[in-house]
Image (cartoon, rainbow, N blue to C red; front, top):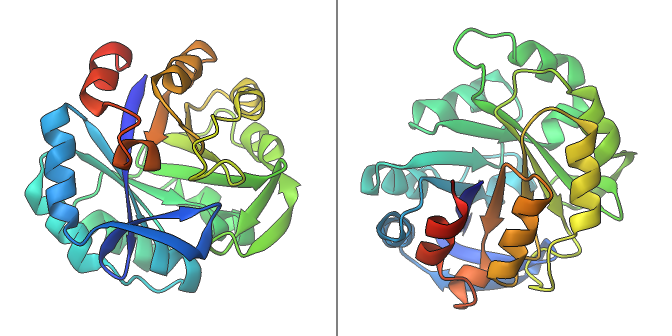
Length: 240
């Protein structure tokens, strides 16, 4: 199982939102590149990066920060936020990221999303972001609720050449109250695409539990920044 420490960018700074609420943002660093270097020293192989400004507005706003992260470390980068058409996806990939996460745009234009996966060079480089409240998906930076469930969408992409599904339980995000293992396991059972869990990690035992239910990876955010997860220890124990 892969451990993916997270860098969420808002106005160029590293922040964490509580339950997706932009009014409840905690700033942890003004230097995303330095945070990325700390992840590399701890032994991470992937970094999960989110452009929160773009997730809310659709307009990419943290390109300089992403470029600084890319220059600072030789790790795999996964980038979400603002991937809503061919041009934005290509722009993100051109910045040297290894995988682009698409959430709202896939739900709004499923035909476009499915065609995207047929493009040469994109097999395994696109992840589907499924962000849910009480099982139902939220879109546009979690500001609107959709009428479809995460399990339904996971079933729909069974057999597709996706790099991953990123499943986030919004109610748990940033709360450090434990991963929603039951909901995550339902998504895992619905598909053959690797599922990366996000939201609620409080400590190492949460990561162990995610491995037991078959997660391909886990995103670690606030629990790392507030010292509740030793990233180096987690990578040593759980990555293989």
